[in-house]
Length: 282
Image (cartoon, rainbow, N blue to C red; front, side, top):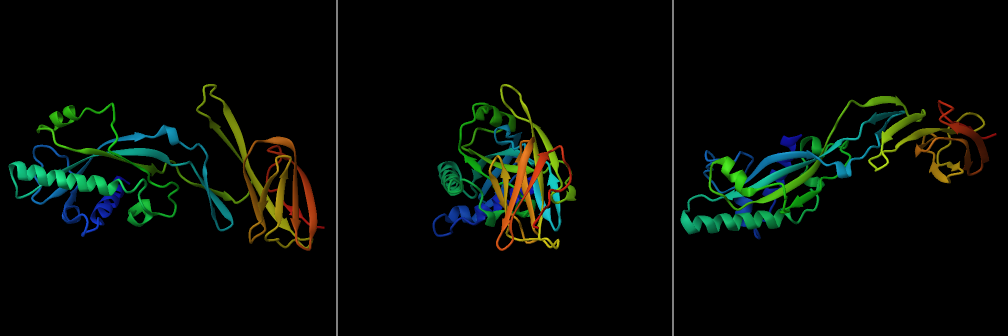
């Protein structure tokens, strides 16, 4: 995944407009460690991935459910990771003040260009990041001060004099666990721990069924309401409907209505009853 993020950033930097940012457009992009052995032959923007942290503030406990034919695939939500780069620039063919000016110009162009993107556009995503199975966008944080980072210590560890740089953080996702395939609307119970002062644990239920005619044929486009909470869904082309993240309790009522078929209702207890909750018109 990290190499796909590197490829994504490379493509983004190489797409800088040549007329507006010619030095950036022509520069090489590197992800090597900027230590004393690093000496690129050409003008280079170097992005050193120095830290990866899980972003717990945006952690999502809700499983990801995808429909595949007449089944669903349930996966643990991906881990959200902050990938932090330190971005430096290196000039070639210049020394002294001319080298400093060239590196500052290139650094300014790089900072100005990536700052235009509060999230990485879809067109730049590479590898697994471009997959349709990706759940979240890739937000960025640019040139923000990290109180836990000390630039002097970093450059001392690299064994070279301090250089001008800025931090670039991209929040990406890491798949965790293996997907589980099962029936599309069979009742599923989900437990998760909420990060609250009380540390409460809440149980939620996903359930559904199929709306059918008196002859047993599926009804597409039927209006299905779950009372007393008043949530409404519409049956799909196969007559199926699904309600997700329902707090379990007895005494629910499912109501369905379809043009030319009238109304039908069914009393259900969730999750005391299992299986599918079909509704059939008389």
